[in-house]
Length: 405
Image (cartoon, rainbow, N blue to C red; front, side, top):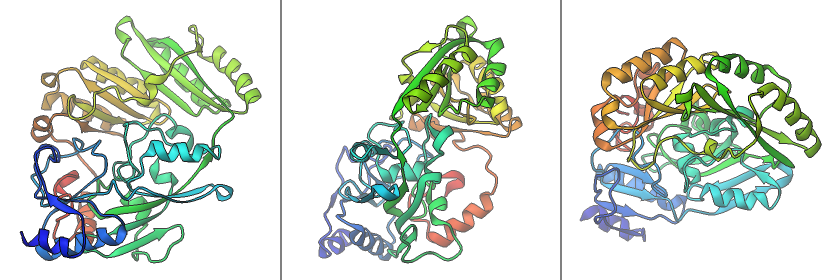
């Protein structure tokens, strides 16, 4: 095996793939475990010379997301590149390698009463996977998404070239904001090995308020909450118990103890409907099971259209949960047979009228192969041109992203 021998000559930890190493159901040829950015560069340069296709993995928590692809030649597993490189508490900045688990990063930052203001929606998520797939949770309303908090990164391009961008920039790729471009690119443009984020202080007080709101009151209530001066960090909804004509609403308040107490009293009056401090653990879990065992959708729309779009999805038999404050919802399909192409088109049309879209996030491989995972995407021609520039041979994560990218 020429590729294997070439990698071993460079002291790369590589081995033939065996059952259990499948990537979304397909067995690759080789598994590599680089120890640093330079070794990632060597792997990609060697793979390019061989014409080999490459996939990137960390803890493998999102391998059933995106479009199913065929078997690749080489998997670059970043789990050993797992160090927190630098934390500057005074500047509210941290630099971490791609294989660092988000939970471990948060625990380390917590010792300085700081945090990366992102929710871990998928247990086991690593820094690299976080950037590649750009998931978001309740605190998106207050702090933004990965794209808003990422200020620098180190990238290895498919030909092995190492590029750095953003904070502590050494070398950039002319004409592109790499931090924004790479976020949510599903590993199709390059391999991220290191990232720098801006941080937030851990608030001294945190409180969730929940209410069981009649559906006919929901639009006005959400509007009142969002237009209030109470600055919620999150406004979440869940339709799981909507069979009785109600929707669960959860509002997160953060800040100083006295400030949270005062705002909580006002928010309780605003929510009414028996609002109380409650268990809102459901807000940091998608409504669908992970790992390709259940179909999960992401639905976006204008904030003012959340209740209408959620109602339409519920009428199709979906369990909807997500951020009413940002217009980002997630939906679980109870049974594969419940999501036909026609149902998906109906929901996409509803979301499109509200300025949004519907994508299939997770689900069985057969379902993702049979249905259009991404739906209509504007700017696809530009996306293909960018892919051609970064990965002209289309060897990196081939076909996993929208439009076959």
